[in-house]
Length: 522
Image 1 (cartoon, helix red, strand yellow):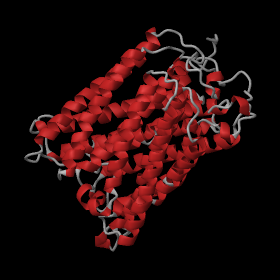
Image 2 (spheres, helix red, strand yellow):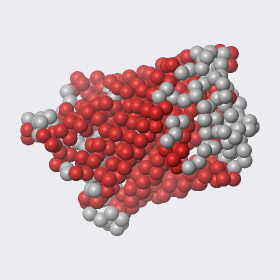
Image 3 (cartoon, rainbow, N blue to C red):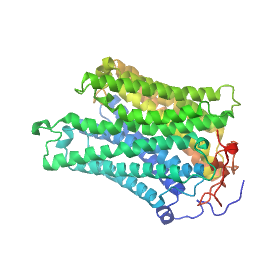
Image 4 (cartoon, one colour):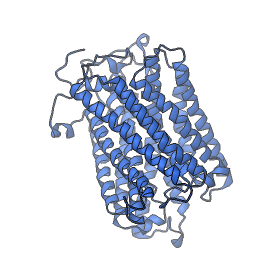
């Protein structure tokens, strides 16, 4: 391993981190902050499941129940799922993969983290003050809420600004800051996936901020936009909201696809099967996710023609996602498999993605939508995809951890902890799909007779999953303190981030690397 006494971790002190414009440090601050947000969301979620089984022993009162439900959904979606991979691994490794010293706009990048952190604080205060709007804040019901709603609006707007800044920063960095000789065909799939996700971040996110800003103006001034009592149309708010919320799911999935594509290629010692097809698929997913936003409005009075078109577009979108999955499996086929935690976590994601995608496709079949969209089936579908994103994030962390920390991690224990997490998540979410298909409504305050068994199994699965996740986190912490020193390139990968010292220098490279096509990563 290359000796380097001036790596990005050398300088200590809270002030040095908060003032830093190094994208790697900003990435780690994001990672820690999002980890805290995810843990808080998990605590609220487990509390909800336990509450259903203990006759309000955990959460007293219907108001508090829905407050906890709002906390769980808002934190898990806005503060974790949407920014998870781009803000953490994207910030850390995109410049390294491009051979750049930093992102295009370092100070704006730091500002994006400040906006995210402000959104975290505002969201926490909003939920603590009694917000029961969940993450959708549907009108006109949200217009009757008080001060917690106002804080929620500002939380969403600040989080949206953070996402937009990140998307712009990544786009300019990819377009203008590639190393000499690094052709478009040399880019790793992860870089391509971040560019495809940035399109959604830039073009869809402003509609979310606009929708919430109009909600606030409607509440303060009575404009009559969304309130039917004032001549407004509640469906107008849903159109604006879902124009962001539907593609937001794929904003999280696309970087996950990039991580898995690169990981299975390196760990199987084979070039990515259908590299060009996967790149095209990423951008097709990006555009179709925006065009198919109306899939959530099938049961909300949308015309049959519009519902048919959006349903058709979403089915094409799911088919393209399955094309990516088949490409990963073809990459692994007859490869020289290097079994380790990064590959195992990628395989867990590959298993969970089809379940979530097929369930999402079922929700977009017009004849099934009215029955399933308001049921626990939709919750199970979303959580399967969220679980796949989580495993992809962990796969990326295990893949790049030697470069990030300069330390090795216990592979065997990591795979055991990952298996525990995988089993727990499936025991949690599969009963939700089954119970939802049988008619159990989502967000129901009390257990329906005959449905208690599925809730018990779901709670047990949640406890197992939390145990597995704790194990994963503990192993990362132990590796920092006691792990052996890592090599510069332990996997034998060929992309540029592995040419940097371990851990990387503050400016990433001593001198700008030049990469020729013959050296190109698969």
